[in-house]
Image (cartoon, rainbow, N blue to C red; front, side):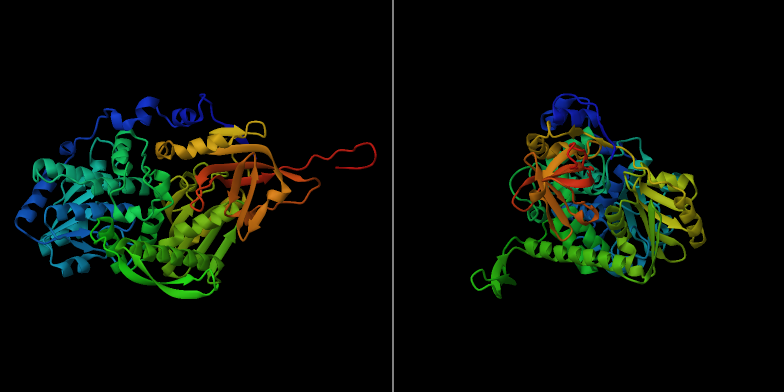
Amino acid sequence: MKIVEKEQHGDLIDTILINGGVKNLDKFKHIETCEVKETDPLKIDRMQEGVELLEYHVNAKNGIGILIDGDADGFTSAAMMYRYLKQLDVEATLISSPHKNHGLQGMTEEILNTGIDLLIIPDAGSNDSELQNELIHQYDIDIIIIDHHDIEDKNTAKHSDAVIINSQLNNMNHNFTGAGMTLLFIEAAKRIAFKTIKPDDVIFTLSAIGQVADVSDVSDMEIRLRQNKGLNKSFSYLLDEYSTGDTSISSHDLSFGIIPHLNAVARIGNLEQRIEVVRALANDFSCDEVSVEKRRKNKKTGKFEVRAEMWSPYRIIVDRMTKTKTKQTKLVNEAISGEDKLLIKTPTLHVMVLKDEKYKPITGLIANTISGENDVACLVLVEQDKLSGSGRGCDKLFEDFKKLLLDNHLVDFAQGHANAFGVEIKREKLDYLIEFFKQVTRESNAYVVDKLYDMNTINKKDIDGILDNQTLFGGNVGQPLLGFKNIEVNKTSIRTRGKVLNFSSGGINFIAFNGQKYDIKPNFGNSVTFNIIGEAMRSSWGNINQVVIRDLEQVQQKVKDNGLGFVF
């Protein structure tokens, strides 16, 4: 295992921030007291036109619909718009596809069935020009699109009969996601048309969730200022169900809390659940508790019994979201273990081709699981006209897996992040792809870590410090990656339970959730020596600070002859 330590700048937190590109440490750490140049929403193309169109329909008491885009950013964007319209005494209609969907594709009938006069599409729709024109010219439905995604034909979008407000059509901060752009629209609406109705704190909290969900650079000073306002204290009843206290919520908390649940509902939840969750994000339900029956284990008898408990509607909805996420996990495992698939393996790439379209919404999760468990890049594809699905790289093998595929013309389409993206490939190209990767040798990249420790420098206080400063991390200032070289572990501390491996050394608890892939070989002596790559994380069980293992290598025991014929 090759490990390289980044340049150090004294204090660990300062080192992480400086290496992440932060220029002014004091300003970054105390963003709430600093002046930051903010985007003026009134200078965004077609913003005024969009607000005036909304004002017209609100004043005319016309029917207004909001199309829910199929991911966490889309959910929060729709909830923000829904809540703001409620502030304007407008009961908007929430419209969702029964399946994971982006934009107007396949949605015409559902939209027409609502009888609305104005359709608002946050976080999607910029490229659906034909469907926009159909709704506008054939069915007399006005459209406002508030978006941040790339546009295929910018000239068409600029002059569209739909009012398209998209950051990609402007010279502005491109770190705003759909939720960020929706907040700018609402701020403009307050300044232009509804001067006594300002966006409330709930809307800022939802915008912050959407910014994190769509992996924007939340270290950007303007975005960070807005994140601080939205997450310094949660004003979302649904988010409160995921919080453990009154402390500020970090990007990391969201990424391991509410966001995976929102995405699970977007992928495999039904239409009713999608709408319910968006309403819950907007605080649209009463907080009054109701009696629910739950099976609980009697500690005295050891038997399960049905008990009545008082739950808020938000706790009930989170319980349903949790069950949806559990169902999603089972579906991923079913796809991986099932027989109705083609699985091709090379030393650096696994390709899975699935026949059942029900796996289409979760190809990224399947690829993530295969990649993580086998330390390889992975493509998971569903057989349609073309093979389409998701790609996941392996950081230790490929710096940019997407670029490698595109530069060598191995796929027809790949869009997204360097090591997480959507992909399409013609069936006849598959053999060429496999042959290419058979020639790729397995040479691991060096891990570049924020701090490298050995047995003399291992320090639990650094772990505590990272976890106490979680609100500083996110975007380009990513979660700190830590390296540990030649760490001795007493054999008695090594525990395995199912896939989970844990042990302790130097006062730090180490845990691997996919520990089954690490083959720990027996040796002489009372200890085992490891090289470790990991991240600091606070356990939700017991609030324990620990290091989650991302990679583990057992160091071979040194063997020597003591001159008496004994080798140890």
